[in-house]
Image (cartoon, rainbow, N blue to C red; front, side, top):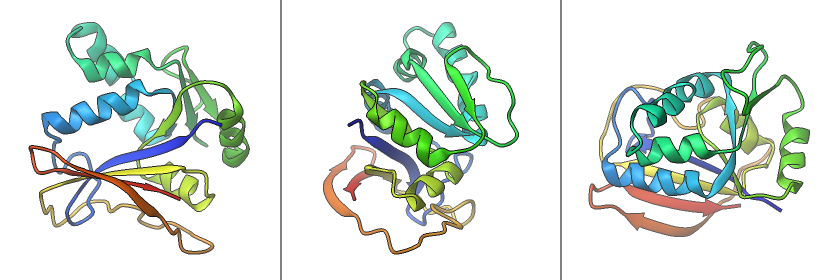
Length: 180
């Protein structure tokens, strides 16, 4: 069975708003490898519209941009949205209902890891118990404002995670890898 991996950058005070800070080169390298290890992305509308067409366009404009190339090589993007009716490209499929069923079906299919990011969809996936690994990349900055990790999550019971790995980057960012 394929794993669903959730990874996100966050500040020391839990801010996950991508406009409040910018990841260092070593963090980008980490996300590039996670992207290479996946062949399917799961996004909500907001994250999808941030990522596509930005990264596919960046891949065309700069063949040396490793993250853009890795992103563009992903085979399938599934977007869970109630409001989005059309996709930016042929790799993308829009799903309006049935998150749990869709993710369980994707996990059963052969292939590489399934990767997700963002905030809203990740909170729903966590509440449904569908995320297998959590990768929190904590950057050494206190922002003092902005959207927080798992803001508004609706859990039936506490989500108990086990730390299985940690890595400290030269930039001071720390990757904390947890499993259910």
